[in-house]
Length: 364
Image (cartoon, rainbow, N blue to C red):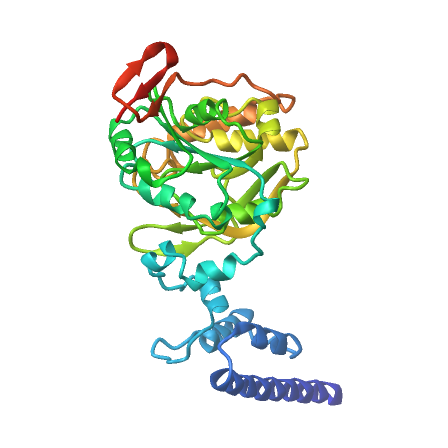
């Protein structure tokens, strides 16, 4: 009987201690911090009686942690990212490279002109007449190209007359621009293969004509090319209405590689979509080191015609799923493939003449 009374007293004592502890924590939470971690640490060190159910404790904690909707307390950016509550960033500020989001992500020393290496940038274009000028402007304004002219921009127009017409109107704005019109529409990866046959420099960046380079993108990449043959980096998604980051994902389509590597592996599969992932898989299966540069270096535009959003080629499309199954079925021993290319004509501007045996169109 005495032992039972003693046990009851102990239980009552623990209940009182727990209640007092919880009450003091509740005051701390309301007065100082909205974060859950402080409460977790305190509750872990507090003995909980078996008579108090686990669900009850969880429900009480949820009430304690939930921020009041009419609270004027401002959470820091780190907490907002956790909760997915980041407000849209002004798109025009981001495009003009004046956003803190960009300036905080991209900070490095500019390579001196004497130490800069030549580079080729290949850009595929199809139905991007509304975006390609912003894309080329961002390349022209790269800090790496300030006072440096040893680079080339190769644009492959994938059988799209509207995009070609836009390029003809704005071509005068850019140094070292080469325009190639594909004979037929075969997709961005066959166009990429075609341009890879035409590059003259060892360092290559593959870029999309609807995206925008951040002002220091090329410099950031060239800082780390030593001993790195393939480099991936992050991006900032944006549309006409909002901008938001994806801190965990590295780009596969926009990428840096060295010519010797891409020639060794042959290039991209002639697929309509998902060929960039297949190429990266071949790299990995053959022990090619892929360096992940932990910086957001370009703006990735989200629009209805983008490959990852278009109904025919989106991430959930039947076509993409078929390509993923095909990718998994490929043998790991596969390394080099035959590079499928498109027929093309180069667009020059001197006078309006088509010379078929030279495969060029010369225009005023």
